[in-house]
Image (cartoon, rainbow, N blue to C red):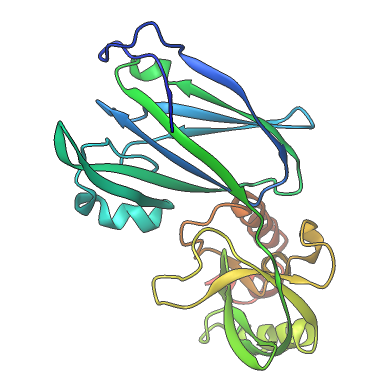
Length: 280
């Protein structure tokens, strides 16, 4: 068993590298799981750079209290942050120096699951002075298998009721606030929503957070076909057609920028609810 430990000015490890690059992956992933921690943890102790096969990259600045904790931290102090930012405590135990040592985990939703991840770089953060000791124990990935079903009804314009096998489940759209019931356009919006989805075969795809603050199931809903094509994303059609507006992301960020841009365009074009009542 071992770990990758990087350079720090506070630890007795100034002979260690400031970065380890090219950790091989070579496959697609919907989410990545990192097991990591830091000693003398500062506000942003290290960075991951995700390198895709097409030459593009995504950078993850790992922040204390959000994606990582000091290995001597009390996780109870961060109970709210654990669920909000996709962090969890993977292991807790003792060592000869201290009781209550922890190893946090972090779940990262890949914004480009259709791309092959070539490799990953692990970098100590120069911006915070190399004061922390970054520790990486493991990385693994997962592919979210979509669940297929048929839409049997709508929940206003905020979600759908889907028959999945022999059961029915209410699914609320990630990133979408339904048209309010007191809005002048509400009835028209619901009718348009019903015409759009009822009877359609759909695929349900989760993000990091699968329940909203009210305990309701939230997901991305795709029309039958390619789940990597945003043209099939029902959440986006609701916003783009002015049947709802962006919001209720609940910590999920995979398609946030895309959905917010669609909402801005719909508002500017005065589509649907934006044409009647100004979207209030």
